[in-house]
Length: 401
Image (cartoon, rainbow, N blue to C red; front, side, top):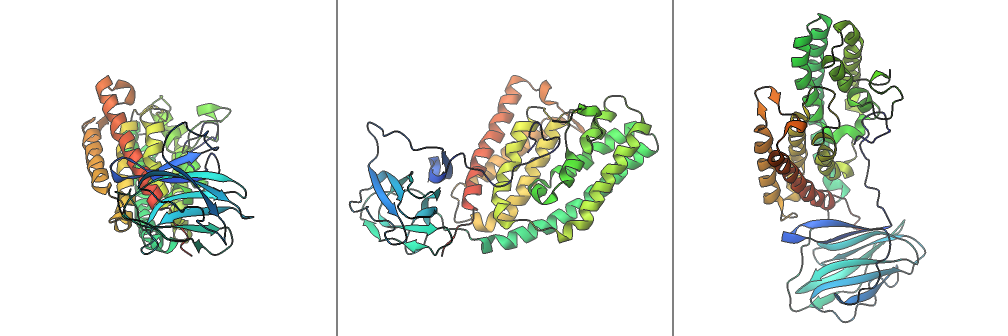
């Protein structure tokens, strides 16, 4: 994520919750969505039934004695001396209906779910202690909300390893394409360098879910001038965007040879050390969401355009990058995410839309979009960002013991 003032490409690590609660609640069409709560809401004058449920090792789930179907609000009160997370789940199959994380000692946090016919139990997971299952509560009527079997850290290791191998191949291609860019600059062929710049940059952008494992190399390769005292003329402004600025602002080949050589060196070093890198499997689902979240923030707005007008080409490459992550996560999402077919259709619609915004190797710049085109692009990616939030939630590994 490009954060103003960072001096480069700085994308977020794990979600930082704006308060101590993170609840998975019902969403339209059977999807799962995230709710962040920074404080306890004021009591409503009217609304769903509210039940206070105890969170502790000895009395997990106590207090829920009069179950009724429909939308419920459970006020989860942690009476223990340690922070805990709580799941409402099917005690037999362990499918999760809702969760709240990081409930501090003495703190109460709400969980909203829809209950129907079936069996339910709260699982309390204290910090540094074994999980505890509360009593089972049964309902004999009503239609419940969505539930999903929990994904564990172990489940995510194979897709993460497969994705890491795919990234290795992508880095190999990025090194080759950056070499072609450097060769054009070296022989003084600026027209050829402008032609070579885009494929090299897009190849790197397709590797979007790996940026956290790239470390400082990411800023060297794909950083911006944000936060640099000298702006685009600052010596710390390097990588693809430094070369882009020079190529589209009349700089000579002589001034661009050093940035092009530095880019090729940084990419080569990243490729050569990638085999020793270790991606965090727990972050793979989150990265699938963040790729297009960043696209909406930085590419559709044109904030990272240094002259080439290629932000929509980058957005299209980010769609490819998102597909690469989803392909590895699909075995885990199938059967867990009822909205997966809708997500696939949304990806296809967005791809067709962005493919229509190019003429050969020339792409429409965001500033030149018509109002209708902009609204369609915003809507297509906004819809995907919302759907991919459910992917991030479902692929967030959970403790089961």
